[in-house]
Length: 412
Image (cartoon, rainbow, N blue to C red; front, top):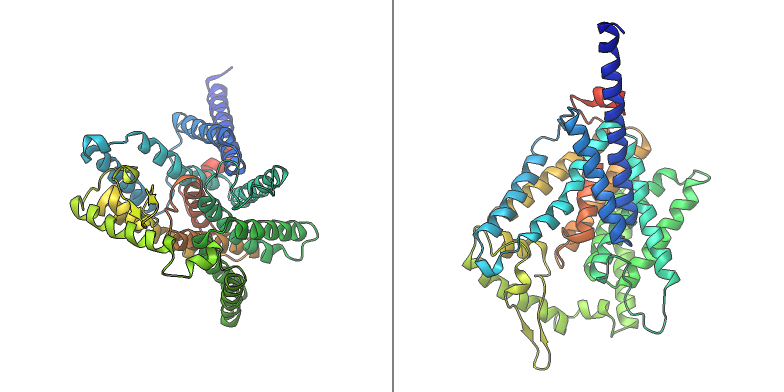
């Protein structure tokens, strides 16, 4: 074989190898997103495969230049701020293992974004994986449903009904956005109607008030962004408000009714938690008490009968201020603002109805998370992984530019 022949052969082998790793990365992400709500094993295995695929591409010379402005930089600063909070924390408050959990939570943003650069059609593929995982989780829950002990719905690997509600609310908004685009399709239309109906019912069964409020805002945004008539947005909100008030009146002992009563024990516990959190913020305002430290700070609520020990501040911003300080909160806020701006730009450039639906659903899902975060820590665990995933899906819409797009597509 001549030198010229050898020179022609080596890039081909190199390109095929990069293509294999790129496919492995995407396959791992699909496994992660499908298994996210019901299987810890699938979640861990999928993320590991995606990381191996991405690392393999890096070894073979892949240098991602993702064209996202300061979004990746802001996310990196957020992780650095979290690391600094652990380093600067009191010895008994240091939880270095929380940094691994944080890395697992935010890494899908980079992995999904890089994968979509290779093939933009993967945006739809990943949204399909998210919605498939939600339906599988609901079917598994229904199969093990015990009417004698059931009170609030939770999912296989999302045991907290609040987190389950946040996850389902994002899936509901994504599903509605795709349903609008595929409503007339003979196969996709009925499938998406089933997805929307099942996730909507499941969301109600979680009785998660923050997630329900987030879903209302997200659905209103999707409806307004798709139909583009203000009266439809007003109608969605009005129907939701009337429905909530009617449910609360019919079931005065429910969590929904309790949430509307400022004198309820749950509401008073939240207010007391926020007041005590303010004192801890004043103690270490810059770097906080350390990532994952809130449950060890001794915050308590006593109503005269029962002592409650909150594991978090029930508010993503207050919780972040306590744990990572001003540095962490500012970095997270900048990241989210840039994400919203990036998805908005993607939405404006979308010409195809399905492209627009994916961007609209992603932006609606981010809105869900931000609203739910007013009464929960919505950037953590499975809902957090889903948030960072849809942020990448939303940003990487039409008009997304990368210097390596052509090169990667050739080998994928």
